[in-house]
Each structure stands twice: as C-alpha cells, then as structure tokens.
Amino acid sequence: MESAWFWSRARSFLKSRGLSRADALHAANAHYNVQLETQAHLLAFMDTFHVIGVITLVAAPLILATKYFKASGGKSSPAAD
Image 1 (cartoon, one colour):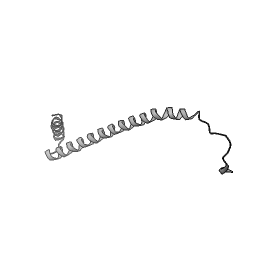
Image 2: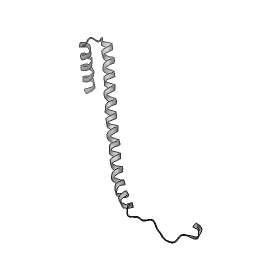
Image 3: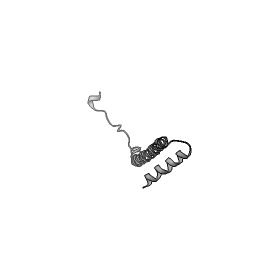
Image 4: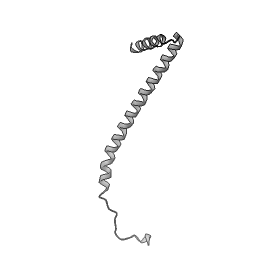
C-alpha cells in the first residue's frame, strides 16, 4: 500500500512540475531506486559497525591478557648452539 502511495504522490508532483506522464514515472522510479540504495548502504554500515564493535569487545580482553606474558629466558637448547 505504501509503495502505491509513493508512486502516485511522486508522479503527481513531477507532473505538476511540467514532466509528461512517462517522464514523471521514470523520474519517480529513479528517485525510488536512489532511496532504496541509500537505505541499503545505511543498513550495511550499521551491520559493519556492529561487527567491528563485537570484534573490539572480544579482542580487548585478549590483548590485555597477553600483556602479562613474558618470554622464557631459560637455558638455550643444544640445537640452538
């Protein structure tokens, strides 16, 4: 229902600005596609932001946990001599 409302409103607006019916329908379709692509990009950005946040929350404690490890400074093995 909402899509039909959009098409009729966009077409009537563009016809009032001097476009023919065919041109108005074409321009309304182009506007609809631009809006759809913009929303898709926004949703993709939100998903990416969410994934980066989860990775950060998982990686931060691991990085802090590795801070306290020290390399063993014991005797060298015979193979290293």
